[in-house]
Length: 123
Image (tube, rainbow, N blue to C red):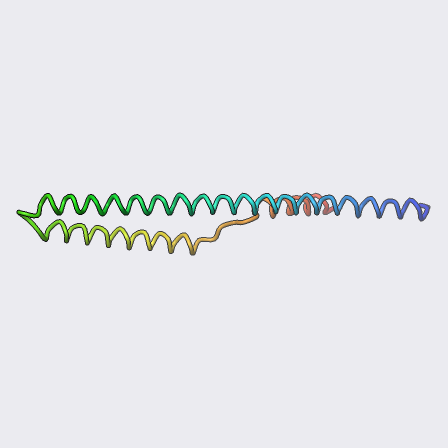
């Protein structure tokens, strides 16, 4: 029969192992959260720059074509660019809505690791 000291030692060893496993998983969660924050921050910065610069470029292109055609066709370039900008804006709004509705898997690596841990612990 096992002595109470060996049983107590085994329980403490098991508890220490479980706590180490829990600590590793929490550290993985923390790393994933930091990576996601950095990714979203960079995405916002580059997205804002792209929208601003592309918007300015399109506005100047529209003005250039309008001025170039001012003597012969005053309303045509204005109408074409208005329709083009409205269509592109509607398309961008639709894409943004689709991406907002799609689910991202935050902490997916941590969830997968915890599932593997549970499978390994099951008899």
